[in-house]
Image (cartoon, helix red, strand yellow):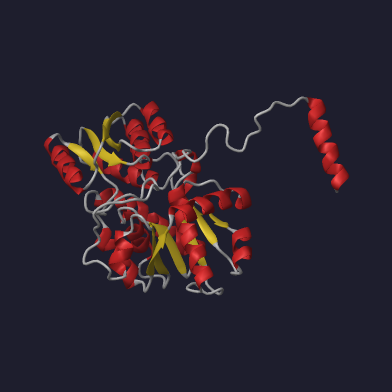
Length: 335
């Protein structure tokens, strides 16, 4: 565990019993990364990043985020007493932005956060003696090393044959693969939204490099048409004899609903997308029933509530105790 810690890491493995039964597969597992202190696996990266900043005697930190990483960096920066400047995607879910505000970091909404902007921010970080925090080996290998513990933990938690990882920039998949390197034959499966899947297309040799012109997916956190660790992620997949999966936004949302209503697990769409990829592979026959797959569920559903308004699923009328009694009596009568 990092010297600077808020209790991140050592997340449990949960058995998705209802899903495995419905798909006819022996067991499907999930790595519960939403149980980290601020609700996502990014806490592991933030802890390692801030540790590196402290060792280097830097004045503070500056980074980019679609939401989860910003909350993590702001929390760990506050713990260390290091001021932060966060360039956050202007279209980030409101819940993610609001979860950052209490920590006191300076928020700078950005209309674009691509490679060009990340490169420019790297220059500013160097100029002003700030630690650069971007969730990618290309920009922050010291911080990304913190996520490698996910793979190391998986080795101790089960004999998994396939590891399904949601990918935006690709860094998480690389980290998990590196954490499992040398001790397992598990295949790495790269799950991306069909509307933003440059790594999958590159793995399938549909494009010459993991880069596309634009994204049409609305899955927050996975909307990177030019993933900074795209080639590294593709190499990790191919070296493990794995593959890529493109998943529709609709399938990700459907799996989000399924996990909540059938497994009692509420994760954000980016997390559910990995489980949806797994389910699609079982249905297509690509993943055999004898497999022992695990999906990395990266973040809490509370981070992105755009699909759920205050009125969705709630009765519009009010009830008194007598109304409740009548409802319960009706249930008894039907049993």
